[in-house]
Length: 128
Image 1 (tube, rainbow, N blue to C red):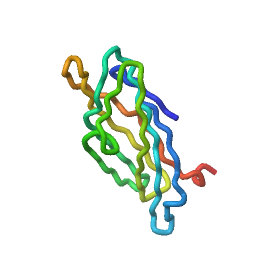
Image 2: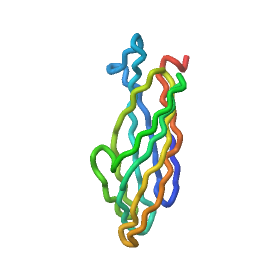
Image 3: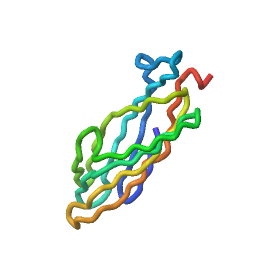
């Protein structure tokens, strides 16, 4: 698990290779990741949007932007957490992701960016 605190939000990421959904013969490697967002700020925040940079070992780079996460824009109170699980398909057994969230300080009506740490996506058989 990797974690990073920026702008008072701790972002922790854990990854999982999804062998049952992957098809190496067709260069399809599926990964899941669990994100835990913990609000260390003294005010409630709302997750507005996300931006992902996805890098595949086969030199494929993809950027993904969108509103909220997994279809919601959660509000996270002070010293509270929110977690979700999502996924990513790669064309190789190794890749990495990073990015940023945009949050809103609900009290001040101000937006701020929270960095998502770089995390690796590695099929376990590549670790031998």
